[in-house]
Figure (cartoon, one colour):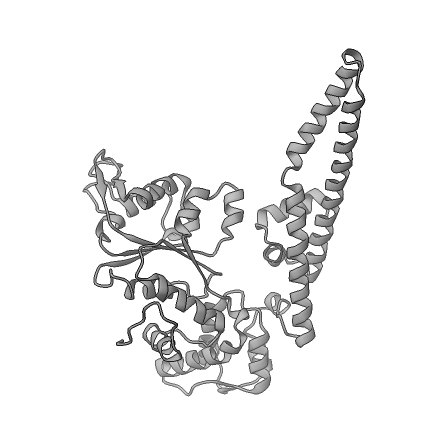
Length: 396
């Protein structure tokens, strides 16, 4: 690739060249913006966090960053933090000395050592154990690490690009991820859109996969009629591009007739996700879903803002009640305490009413997802565990 891209605006030709080089397909504006940000941040030494659902193609962006950085001639390694057992992740990242643990029969260099001078992509970084997060934070801040079983501090010069499909704010609130590490990783954030958010790219992707599989399996490429194409675009695609590719491969292998109708395509689309299609019933259905999401975000912002200090407020209310009781005996002027208790009680009633709002929002969301708790948790921005607890708490 010969185009020189600096801090100027990228041209359409620049974008197309990058997409062709890295095998990225699509013309969506959000996708283009993500590529532009990756190229612009590449020459810097800033840490980058790539966010997006599983299967959207987050792995392309650290490759782009490395290729357009001053480290492009250095090593590039990708580590799936979620696929490495907790007991060995520290050894994988930071290395170990001989005898550091039972199976350590020889010393081993970790990725931070062998990637020195290059780029290290930490995929599924949200799955790292807390103890490993502490060590990672030290490397990012000081460039220093210690092998397992050693006391010698070593230096490394590695550019870290991380990715996650988690809601990191939820992970921080739940104590699963360190807030200081999150902000250290998230100097620049690149958001990769979900496939359902770039509907016009879906037919283009499907055609590319169909051609690839026709070449791979030496058979004619499958083709979708208009109705099938509309169904493809309206589908929720919970697994994003990865799921779309899987469906294209299944149809390519199984179907004898390569002209695919909507009824044939529907057999390869799980029922529970069809119910989540954003435009399955037309534009009005899409608008309804968008309005629901906006309503949910607005109500939950108010709800969580009011409930944030609910536990503390209740403690203060109990303390005020005790003060009131003591004041009746000891304090000749108890009126001030009584007023404070009454004001706190009013606030408690407001919080209680907000709990009713939360209960109603959960109920409506479960109705919208036809009782699918996993999908409801996504719409509500909660973890499945938290949603299950709320359902039990509210008797839903």
